[in-house]
Length: 511
Image 1: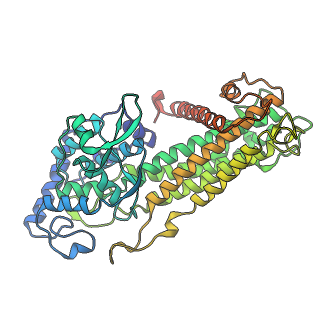
Image 2: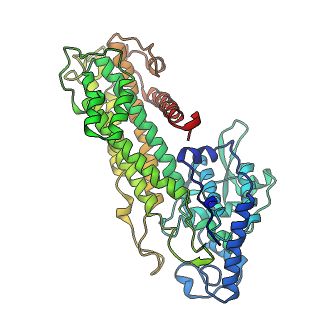
Image 3: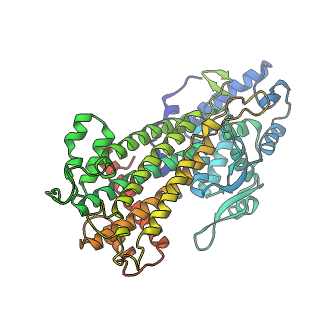
């Protein structure tokens, strides 16, 4: 077949998450989709008629490729059954739904010899709201995320588990057979071609990495928001954020973050004479640090975008030829996850250092230590800082590159493996802790606002933070306030990013 431009539909990551959202529906296959898929299947049929070996169809899987196979249905059942060895808590329902969308998007491109009727059945189940509960551990991400994807396939057969919403709208785990029956969906039977196309892909690590990257972008926006507010409250030198610095250096992320910080400074802002000409790096270098993080995250996002729009099956059909290769190897996803984790750490560490600056009388403008109005009798934010330090330490452990721990497996076959989902899982945990650092700094900023006698009734989330964390007239447990501040700042950051994206997209739609 000739590859059509229609196979190269390019979605942005924001568009992908929108199209895979809870209220979204997959459109039926177009005439062009069906033509490509049937042409691909015809090429495979021609190869089989000529007695040419095809992986998974005439031959066994992995190192068993040396042995012949006979029954397609038996092979399909064997494939998803022997790979049903993943373990651990299921990935979040948002990620599990995105995983299936990514596999369906790949299979409709016409490289995978998937039956249009089978594809439509899967899409109908997805549109109906069936969400497999996919375990998070147990793949090396080399021949795709075989084990987690096999569990997703098994869920469609009525084996294993699925996510369902209860009467209160909360997500729960139920037996997959029960979830299918509730939706009026018959259990699937997987022919080997469709089973191979579904499990031979980077979809699980990719879905987790996309969600992580988007969360990390919002965290950087929240960190810039807080940096601007701290500078405004302290009367720090606004020169640190002048456009000329970014223009002189030429780094795009730096200029963009500096503009975000300037949005939080009052009109005509000037340095308080009591503040130093040059602030510590956690304030002065906010644009340089967060800008570098932003650039790295956007680079990782571009890698993930290309992966999400591509085909990661094996074998594939390309221009009337069956090609055996390694598109399922998830090294691009692995590196993107690792870069997200490393960049994330720098942003979170900057916020933790800002927290440290605010609780020290040496740098907070001679306010009491730990921002307590009752030094000695009260400890103020001492516990908040200690926990934030612990969070950063754990993030450093989690951000260690998973690709450095690759081990050969699967006999002689998978002798180079990327561990992409392992890395993405670690980054997801690091992000949970990173957002708690943001929440910790949010509570600190609320206390700083009060102690400086400044109004919180200004544009942004500051009034909400003040309501969440009122002045510390006496010590109290602050864990719930940290979590609430996290949620407020995350919502504010996501809204700001959405507005920014809409402003930069023709027609004003979020990309």
